[in-house]
Length: 134
Image (cartoon, rainbow, N blue to C red; front, top):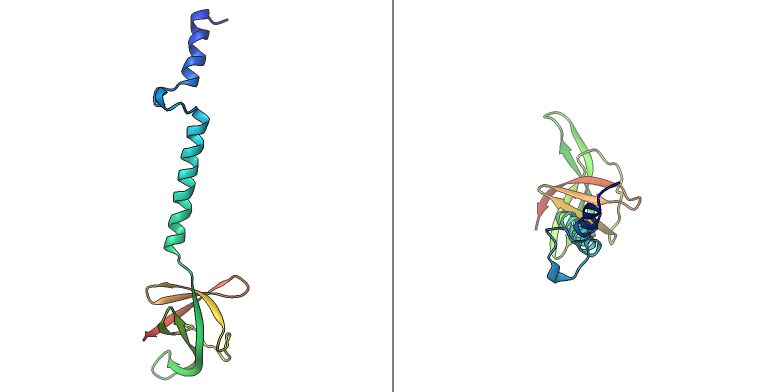
């Protein structure tokens, strides 16, 4: 069994750690909860800022030919979308025979450099190449 002087000091050391100021009046669990809340807010805020989803409206679409090599040409659907007053011309990097979207459809989009990520109705994301901005 521990000596009495040791058992008297152990609870005092646990309830008042040296890094916690006595003047604050906050217990260890309240301080830990506040730190956890702040950390949670920071962790959730940065990905949201990094991946801003915007709403786009399809203004028109058309079939265009593109060339994969010098002798092969293929068709793909080119969409004209409006995002906050800017007009983008986007297309898939693969061959498409029919459009996935119609004029007036609202899309959730995210832009990264020369790529437009479109979130489809099923929740999956498709990559489109940005062909131009007006």
